[in-house]
Image (tube, rainbow, N blue to C red; front, side):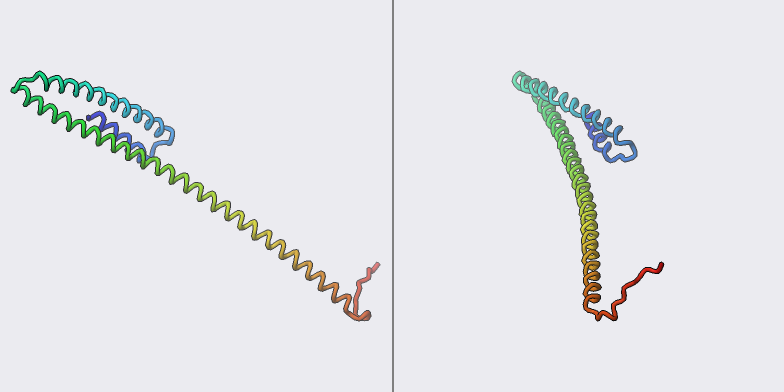
Length: 163
């Protein structure tokens, strides 16, 4: 159990350590995941063997040995419960890691969407300003022509070139 506990502590602490580089953390995490899976496999194999031996001993034990057998059964159940706690802790940690990864992806997507929205909004503003400017220039030209056309002929000033 001590090895499994140390692996679980290292595995859950590997993510919290931000001083190491991302690639070395990933390699370390991958190695710890392999060690964890190997340790859990060993525990399951030993569990099967112990259960078989305990069942055999219960059938063949005499009264004096039954007390020892009951104690061993209780010890085994305690170890089994502790191993399950470690497995649940790692499962919770995996869920937290997945949720954190999803949150990072969502945050990145939201940031990109808001940046794209800001760019689109700015582009839309410039397009509106360009249209307004074109409309104002057109109105100004129309007004100038209408003033020229509506003025009496003597007041119209047409520039002449001076050569």
